[in-house]
Image (tube, rainbow, N blue to C red; front, top):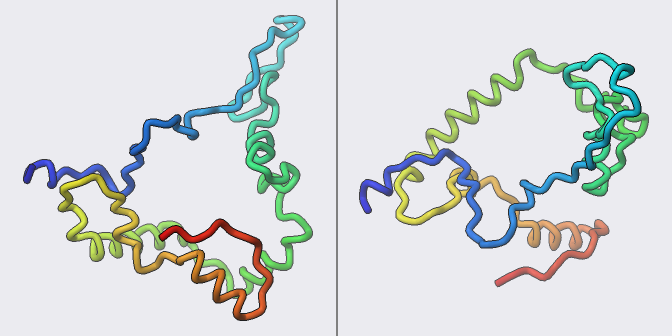
Length: 158
């Protein structure tokens, strides 16, 4: 048991604890179809559209309840242009992703020292970032006290 507690499955242990289906393995693919003429098929382009699924990203956005027209590939929509300009007003540092990844790695090493020791399966990501998590119910109460309209939400579990 002591040796099993020293195993390292990574920061995120994404195994399901339930016997239900894994919703991330279900892909809404369309059935394959044969073209009218094999000699008139276009040249394949890596990352390009195909005859069966010409817009997979737009289909995924629509399946999740979003607006396919608002995809990032098409640039920033006019509704979001002011927000994007405002957030970039101070400039964007070069290599920001690398810098954030290094800082996050140092943070996780500092905060996650004792998370390597575990007797039972647990979500170590939640352990490391626990102090930074928001409680949605207390935030909703805070917003309502401030007079901000909030949507309804399910009741808080004990």
